[in-house]
Every structure is written in structure tokens, then in C-alpha cells.
Length: 385
Length: 215
Image (cartoon, rainbow over all chains, first blue to last red):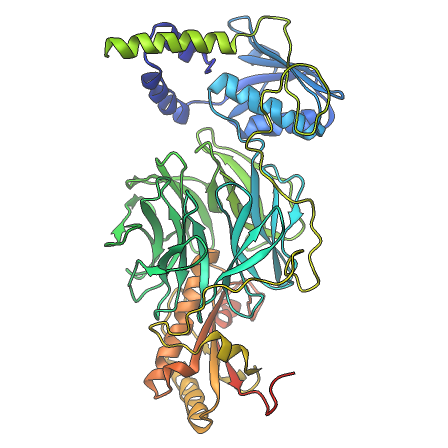
């Protein structure tokens, strides 16, 4: 239940939850960071809580500025008491036995986010990404803050574009291990792998549909890199774009009805939408920016995040899903939405043309924080939903 | 607002208030997955937890703990008529033969630069003289695009070079394409001198296996 005073007021007045929920989303997106004060935590718990709350849109402040406080105790079981300073009310008092100290702190952070904003926290979600060292790249998974990285491939070859399938138990990605860019799936519980699509030519940029029943991808088998959609396991591929130019980086609308894809049809990269059932490509207006690539559709359906190229630099941008004015948010590339449709993971350069690292962005507040990095150049993150 | 929805929302507010109600001093326990202690009831925290393997030892060939890959879709008869994967994978790759014939591209363009025409003609002439040979074209980009955009652009470049070879009389079923995007630069520098060398299409000669097959 939302505990923001404004929302509480609306609820008390008996305004419908639907109406107030709409208000929340609007005010959420434009609101300033929520000031919060942490006290009593130490070690991992303190580090994790500060990170999680900052990227969830909170500012960690001194007691005098705080609207909320979390008073806790780090120990075998983390304890936390969340209080609303203005209303002098305790919102919860919880203990988190079991698990690692990091896991306990993530659970507390999610509870704080839920209690204050009404949004489900994302502190216990996962990332997959590509890590390149020298000329070799492998797929990795980690916690959303980069902790507990796990190397998922060991082919000593090139991989690209790892993406979660729904359910968080399986991935798809491109690997060159057979000497060609082919699409594979990998089961994360058993470790088994399957080559899904391996036509002659490029089989790249796999994107599972939100319900997992389809796979969008770029195939060059018809003579040009086009958008294709197949069954989940690569069967029955159907060609959706027929331009002579190259398409790239497809993503799905959350209802699975529409794809957003990049095409160079007009001579430079632009975003287009196309119905998953087929039909004409429609240019997506991104007023104010051009050279747009790497779209990702927010899980709530409202936004498309993407990368804008400025030659030597890249920026993370966001545009309404129906098109409109594009907002330039921060320098970086290849954004992927968290399930909360608010936080994004993206790659950015450590220096001009230097290796890439992964960072999180809370776009309503503009909060940006690097996650823990694996040695090498990390890019192409995908956030589990 | 319909009266019903108003009533419903009031009821909902009541229910939510009760559910979320948390009297001062009363402590709730939220055991984490794997906790075997007793205090309090679980709030179902483990629900929807992502499942990941522990760091899983991969087999030496990297195919994963459960061994071999399962075959996937492979249609050799795509409309573009590239040679099938089986055909290509059964041939020997010679990266030296056409080393001097690499063709180059302008920034963000997929048309072979004019000075590459002679190289295309050399490759075509060789293939005409060796009718049992085929060629793989590998397309590459500089680092100034995004990764998957470059992967598609590199493929578009390889396909343009392929179209040129077909235009010079080489059969479509003798030319296969690949793209490495920006992943395999020829030069590591970060200036136009390096980028110009990285925006390229390389030709790899494919020859039939010696009699008795590959070992």
C-alpha cells in the first residue's frame, strides 16, 4: 500500500484506487528524489541499502532533511524499522533472518520502496550481459547491482546480445562458436544449450516475446538483414521487413502486438514499429534526436528507451511509445528496462573509446550509479523481468 | 465516479489499511530463502526469485555441463541462395589467398568504395578459374556505432560485396556472408586511420576437403 502522504490523503478521501494510481504514475515520473535517512546499519547491509535506495529514487540525507528514516541493526538477522518523520508513524518493523547479509539488505530495500512508493522493488532481480576481454567475449549473469557474477559461457569466442526469456530461467544470445553468428538458448537451471537458429548468413539480435511464445531476430537469409519472427525455438521463421537496408535490435511491446526495430532505410538509423502479425513499417518520431538505435520498450508499455549516436558519443534517450519528443537522459548506450518501468541498466565508456562498464539509471530523478564490474569491457545488458 | 466503484475503493482502502497495519513495536519476520528458523510466518519472499546456477563448470568445448548442442533450424534454401552451412563447414578456410583483396567502406555506408572494384574483380577471376572453390565474406565496422547496429551493418556490407561478386558472374551458391560488427577490428587505434581500415570486407577462400575428407 502506498504510504506517501499525498497518496494516503487521496485514499482517505475515498478517491478510487485507479484514479489515484494514475496520479501516482504521473507525479512519480516528475517527482524529486525522496529524502531518507539510514541509521544503525554497517558493513554489507549499509552498502547495499544505500545503493539500492539511491537507484530507486531516494536521496540519502541527514536526519534533519529526512522525510523517512530506516533505523536498523546489522547482525545475523538484519532488522529495520521504517518511520515517516512528518507523520511520526512507524510504517514497519521487520527482521530478515536467513540468506546472506546482502540478500537481507536487498529484501529490506524492496520493502522500503514498496511501503513508501507503492512500487515493487527491483533489488532482487538479475542482469545478463556481455563481457569482452582482449578479443574474446562471454555471457555473464549477476545480481542487479553487479554482485555475484556468474560466467555462463566459456567458448573463448565471440558472443552478443544476451536476453532473458520470461521466467528468468533461460536465455537467448548470439554466439560465433561455430564460426558463424548463430542464435542459441541456454537453460540456467541445467546449463544445457541449444542452437536455435543457424541459417547461412547472420542470425543475430534475438528478442524473446514477453509471453515467451515467439522469437524476434535479425536474419540475412533473404539477402538483407531483415526483421524475422519465429516460434520460441526458432521454427517457422517469418520475414516482417523487406527493405534493402539493414535492420537491427528488435524489441517487443509488452502486449506482444508490436515490434520496435532499427532500420537504415532512410540512409541513417531510425526507429520503426511494425505489427508482430506483419504489415508496413511505421517511423517512430523521436523529435530532437537522430541516429537512433537499440530500442527497449518499457514493461508498462508507455516508453521506449534507446541510444542516440553522436558519432564519437552515445546518449540514453526516452520517448513516449507512440512517438513524440525524445528526452536525452545521460551519456551511455544500450538501455534495458527494469520490471518497474523506471530504472534502466545501460553501458557507458570509462573513457572516450575505452572499455565499457554497466550502470543503473533511475530516470525520473536522474540518479546514476555504476554496478560492481567484472574485469573486461561489459556491454549489452538485459534486465530480468 | 460510479457509486459502486466508490464503495469498492473505500472497502479496498480498509482492507489494505488492515493488511499493511503495523503497530509500533510489533515485529514482522521475513525469512529469506533457505532460512530454517521458526520466528513468524514467511511473507512469501522466495516467490518469483530468479533461478541461477551456481558458477557452473562448463565442459572444455564450452557446450555446457549437459554436453552437446541440440541441432536447430537450418534451412539451406533461403531465397538468397547462400551455400548451406553443412557445405561451408565441410570446406577448408584459407585466409591468405585473398588477403590483399580486402575491400573498404565509407563511414556508415555499405557500398564498396570505388577503389575496391579491382579487388572484387580479382576475387571473381580466381573463383571463375577454380570452379569447385567458394568464398566467405566477413563484414566489419569501426567502433563508432552501437554494437548490434554494427553487426547488421557489417552483414549489409558483406552482402553488398556478395552482390558485386554475383554481378561479376559468380554463382549465388558460392558466396556466404558473415558479420563481426565492431568485435574484430583490424586496427586498434581510435582515429580515422584505424577506423578506415576497420570498415572492411574480407574474403576467405573455401576449398573442398582433400580426398578422404577432413580429419
